[in-house]
Each structure stands twice: as structure tokens, then as C-alpha cells.
Length: 88
View 1 (cartoon, helix red, strand yellow):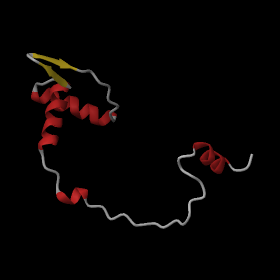
View 2 (tube, rainbow, N blue to C red; view 1 turned 120 degrees about the horizontal axis):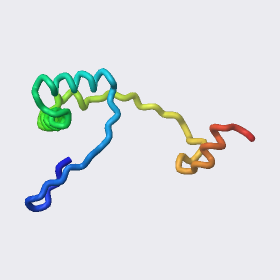
View 3 (cartoon, rainbow, N blue to C red; view 1 turned 90 degrees about the horizontal axis):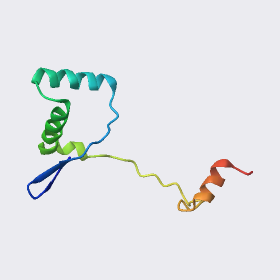
View 4 (cartoon, rainbow, N blue to C red; view 1 turned 90 degrees about the vertical axis):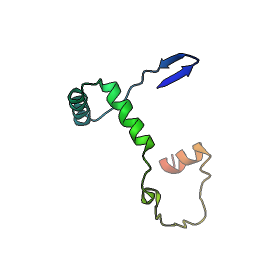
């Protein structure tokens, strides 16, 4: 990430866990284009962020489920663990 402070830009290192095959393909494409892997990822992310996703990408038809009365308060972690573990 590049953060600008006046005329100075700072880059931040990060760690990504990528599928081995995906990383091999990315390295291959970076070499074909004569750019670094970092440059390839930055350019790809910039392009992805500027594209308008199709409207149907955000349309979901989730079913409504009426499960009845709750038997435990989901905010009560101890009660949830007790329910999951069963009687001691």
C-alpha cells in the first residue's frame, strides 16, 4: 500500500497466503510482462477496483428461516459452550 505524506510515499509490506498454482501463474505472467510480482499484483488490484461489477453479482435469494424461540442468548459465550458440550 502506498500512503502519501506530502511529497513522501510509503509502502507497506504484507503477507498473502496464495494457492501454489496461482502464485506460479502470477510469476509467469509478471516475467512475460517484464514487471515485478509486486507490480503485477498492484496493477491487477487497481484494475479490479476500477471495474464496475455486474449488478447480478450482488443479488442473493437467501431463504428466511424461522427457528422459533432461542434456547440460549448468543451473546452469552459460557451458555453457548455449555449447550454445545452437553451436560458435564
